[in-house]
Image (cartoon, rainbow, N blue to C red; front, side, top):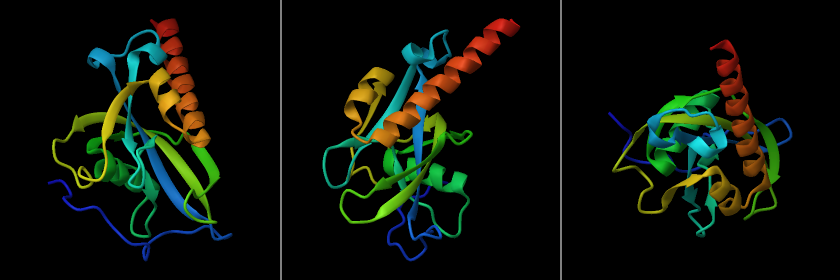
Length: 169
C-alpha cells in the first residue's frame, strides 16, 4: 500500500540545537537501459522535480519529522514529491543553506535513492512536474549549489565503485 496524501504542516518538524530546520533530500537515480555501465556519469539518469512555488527544478526534499528516521524521511519525500520508491543508500553529506522564502537556515541531509518503482499516481503530482535527466542536464537545471555538490559526490561514489568492481573482475 502506498501513501496517497502528502504530510503537511511543521508541527512534527525536527530542528537542530541552533534552530536550523532539518531537511532531508534524495537524489533518485537509475541506470539507462536498466543496467550499470562503465561510466556512471554517462549511464545515470537522475530525477528532478519542480518547486511548488516556481518551475525551478530540484531534487525531492522536505522536513525530517519527529516520528521517522532520516532514511524514512528521505524515502517519504521521494514518494510524495516525485512518485518513486527505491533503496535509500548511504548519506552523501550535509549542507547548511538559506531558505529562499524566509530568513531561516536549514540543515540538509542528502541520500541517493536507487529507484525500483515509478508510480503513475503520487501525492504531489498535481503540484509538481518530474523529469528524468542526464547528469549533465541535471547540473544545468538544478539551481541550488548544495544539490549540485551532492550530485557530484554521488557520481564520484558510483565511479569509484565501478572502478573497484573492474579491478576485482
